[in-house]
Structure formats: C-alpha cells, structure tokens
Picture 1 (cartoon, rainbow, N blue to C red):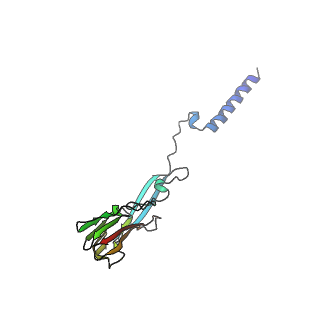
Picture 2: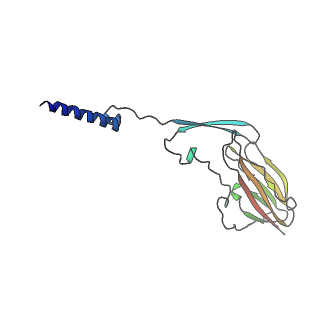
Picture 3: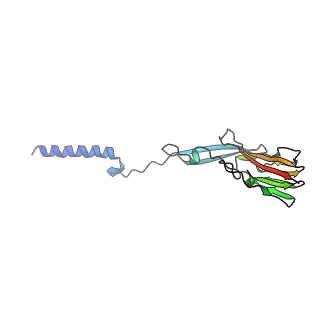
Amino acid sequence: MQTFPGRLRGLALVSAIGCGIAGVTACGSGGAATPPAVQTITVTSVACDGSIATTTTAAPQSSGGSSGGAFGHPVTPQIGGGLATPTPAPTPRVIRGGAVQLTSADGGSTIVVPVGTSIAVQLGPAAAPFCWSAPTSSDQRIIEQLTSSSGNDRAGRGSFRARTLGSAALEASMDPRCSPPCGAASMQWRVQVEVTA
C-alpha cells in the first residue's frame, strides 16, 4: 500500500509536465491571447508644387513571413491599356470631328487624325504619392504643343494641334514623390498619333 501514493504523485508530475507543454490556456488558467504587434509606417509625399504632406498608418504585424500586400512589395500602377504585359497592337481609333480629348485610359493606344485636329490631354489627378508630369509631344513639327502643365492637384494637362502629315507620340509619366524614396515605380503614358490628310 506504500506504493499507491507514489504512483499518484507520479501521475500528478506527468500531468504537470503535460500542462507545461500544452500551454497555460489548455490547463485552465484562462490567460488571454497576446495581441499582435502594431507596425507603424510613415510616408512623406512631395506634391507637384513642392509642398510636403506626411501620412502615418498602423496595422497589425504578422508573425509569419511577408506575403506581399500592405507591407509587402510595392504595387506598380498600370496606366491605360496594353502596358502591363505585351499584347497585339491595338486597332487605331480614327478621329474625324476635328477635336479629341485623351485621358489616362487611352495609354498605349493609337489614334488617326486629320491635319488641323485639336488634341486635349487630361491625365489624373493621380493618387498620392504619385504625380503626373506635363504631357509633351515627341515631334513638334508634326504635333505642335500649345500648352502643357503639371498642377499641384497631381494632374497633367496639355493642348496640342496636328500640324502636318506624319507620326508622333504624346507622352507623360506618373512619378512617385516620396521622401524618403518609397520604392514605387514610375509609369509611362504614351499615345501614338498618326496625322493624315
């Protein structure tokens, strides 16, 4: 009969070891789970006019490895069609009304216009920290640049005129304005213009 209490003590010891392995909550202590750590990210954006704005965001930090997303690799914006992956050349859009307006959605396209056509470009406004550059013509002899600007509203605007027969491109870029650099990539906007009689 002397060995029976000894066996009970041995079982109690095994039970205590099991509790240590299973964790405090499994043993009925009612301990609360530890909340996830919070990661704070501060981004300083430089607007088109040179003004500076600072944005601070906080989100739970995962205990595992990074899988992209909010704090993973930066997401590169796409401008217009056909710029993310190589695609067949789009069918040119023929303009006959003497005037046309182009937006960011027209990126990667080709338009055909007669001599004398007015071309207005309205890009954006872009979301911070990106900023549109002023649109330009690749050949002033064919597509004359009348006005071009990049405003503090992060938009790019321009007005152009088809002067003579030929081919030229209207171009702009959407660039990140971050300090320190935020790793985001610039994106190019381009519309090919074919000028006909």
